[in-house]
Length: 226
View 1 (tube, rainbow, N blue to C red):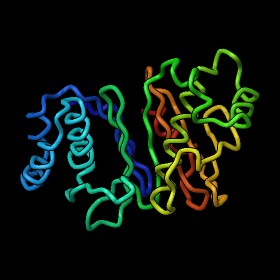
View 2 (view 1 turned 120 degrees about the vertical axis):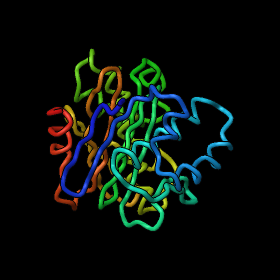
View 3 (view 1 turned 90 degrees about the vertical axis):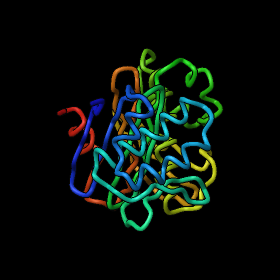
């Protein structure tokens, strides 16, 4: 079973899944009524990799977390659980899927580490943000740090999108950089904090608001303890 991580914290669950099943094996892990529900939607995807990521995301939620309500999407593209008050955020990259379900808004992103983010950082980081990043980290960390910053912005974007009309990654601003926790603000000055940690050649980022009892450090410690 390709369940790499399963973190359970008060009011939050996190799953990291490696896709190594066939499409048929993934489908068999779903409850019968969801198998039928998702089977119809799955046929609309022609790209096999997209089909597998989409299906594995749902297996992660329903098989690992025991949630038996469908995942749907809002007009802005963010996912939600139908007829359920829980919040959900999902991400996938190169055969791995990250999912968070919680009682409060949250955002998650997973990115494979390459040099691309470093080369293209001016497309998602302002000059001020690049300065904040470079002044906070050593030179040999910067390539990975750019991926971490990209993942942090994606996670923050997903966090804000659950409660605030936000359309662009440019609507988030990196304001503070620590070794494993970044702080960002939206255009309306709402602050969120993003925990980021490494898993092999991947960066995983989780965005949380300031006004909840759970902290980024709690998530980092739980991830590293498994």
